Length: 393
Image (cartoon, rainbow, N blue to C red; front, top):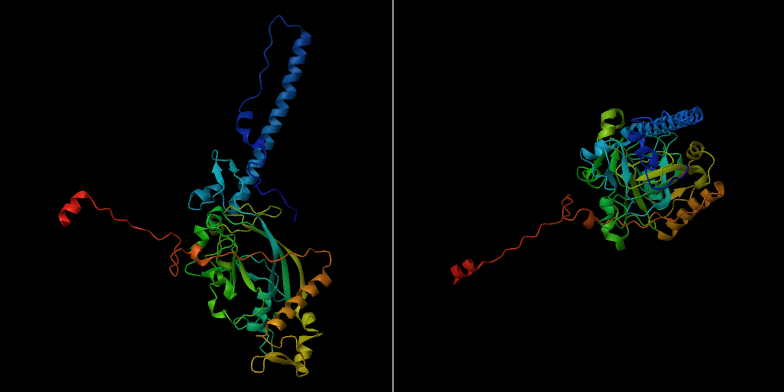
């Protein structure tokens, strides 16, 4: 995916701003009656060339505005922002042209991972992870089901770990509270289900969320607090990628909903701007098979031979030892290293990208936590007047 400067294509070319005036009239060349025929011929030629150039400029500018506006309708147009979305970096010059101020938040670039079946679909309105987070999901939810490598809440077998090259930028509203990442939102078939009522997507915009279970980072041990002390994969974290129309499940999403609830995914080839409709971009960056990671040729044959990936009762596998020791930090780190090494082996030319700092802070994000509100607590001060003092005396 090619990278463009951190500005929307709307308004980046000055010709767009000239379209109205340049198309309103053609230039007029005045000639006097005393001028000779040669002068008139030159004047006419100048008129023709200038007129064609002006028309071409007007058509070009109009076309850029038309295509940009059409694209904006699909991602959440400026009109939608005025209807209730504070896009922060957008200022309106007139009804058809947007100009952008430089974003406040820095660009983040890293990998996200997803445990996946054979099905292919985009990662928007989905929860993602780093390597440790993906392995924790496998260990805690998947591999202990003996006869099928499927989840507690899913019957679709998991076969691979996907990797995505992701770039993110926080909205100004989030970054003004010293955060690059928001809360992790949970999704059920594309619909946001929490925390609270997912109001954060409207208030801060559809920003990328992150959470950890490191006891030294209690400020971002939310919303899955039940795993604090349980998940010992070093540096494990989960992310969320808010997509459009997140108030509805996939099959109920309509064009109107997509307009009213823009997601954070940027158009292909555009760097995240920090606007409410462009907080992250992604592209597929490879995948590995879980069976290859475990060192087996076929899951079905392995099970038929009496093998078991992992047993929660014994904390180890049968005819396999890759998953032994769920609560052993050293063994968990070895599994993380094995995933990274297998990706490196299969994709040697792709860069190594470290995980960014997860700076989500529940007390900055929800200033009145455990209430799910975003306003700072109000402080009331009382002033005593001279008259009040006299009454007390």
